[in-house]
Length: 412
Image 1 (cartoon, helix red, strand yellow):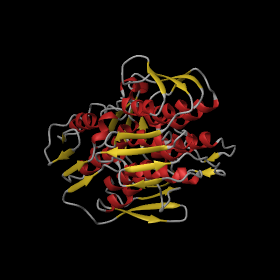
Image 2 (spheres, helix red, strand yellow; image 1 turned 90 degrees about the vertical axis):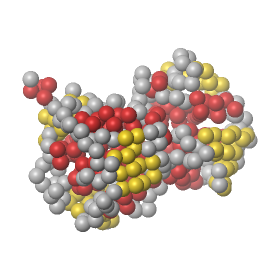
Image 3 (tube, rainbow, N blue to C red; image 1 turned 180 degrees about the vertical axis):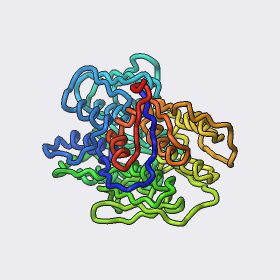
């Protein structure tokens, strides 16, 4: 399946953004750890969160989490503390996403986890029990989700947990998000320098916890406004100015690319401004999920860039750095890269817009490339259903502001 995306002449609309997947998944783990009877309200309706809910509501020996990387990491830690034997598995891509850093850390504090196929990768057999806790050292440059997973189970271990972070910390705002949610559920912790100390203590149920809307999802609407040559006005509902989401930084970053943010009681209104950089250099170590959006936006606005802090992109749903190089070349842009950076100096190549943009089972590839239609004309997006992972209503929302979607295969 593929969508041929065609852009409208004018952009006007009000969008109800999905709830934050990152907050939803943490809140569900903390609800389970606190044994709360109260609901988590405004949960994300995305595939990742639905997978997490099924894992809690339908306990079974084998739990298939599909392509949900957050769920794999959080549930690996959670089920290590819960009596019983379970197998966590997923898609073929999931079976090739490394998890040894987390498993090794959990084993250090007493977890019983076995690799069922390839060493260092899912599927995992987990025999849950009360964990000892203690002190562990962790490479801070791999994935913040490993750290968050360990932080959330720390209070229910016998000795609590002291996490010593080695190297440069990636995605720090996500760790802060975990800290904030843990405090919302009654747990206190100490974070000084590269040491996080969490004593054994009881979680307290949070009364009807409310999840805010997703700033990561908002980033694609910022991209749409930035790439439009109209004077669009898009209202995004549910976003909060004082947000615990690191990706809320998107509002400040896009201010430099011609998009202003007006906060209202309901959310934000996006409008064009006259600001424009001649080149863009930024370290995305705290907001890696925004990188694809900014690569596409800057290239199509002819703004040379150098983006660093991208080391975690190699182990996401796909190798996002390699995927961006491949798909941007189809549009006529030569993106250079190493393991931690992507950059573009203005070098162009022959474009082939007849080729579909492959999405590599990665929701963010699909959403980052759809706005290309505003600049280069109709663009073909392969396997568009991948947006279900975080933003199931993305295509419907695009249509609501005038985008047209055709399925060429159906027409034939």
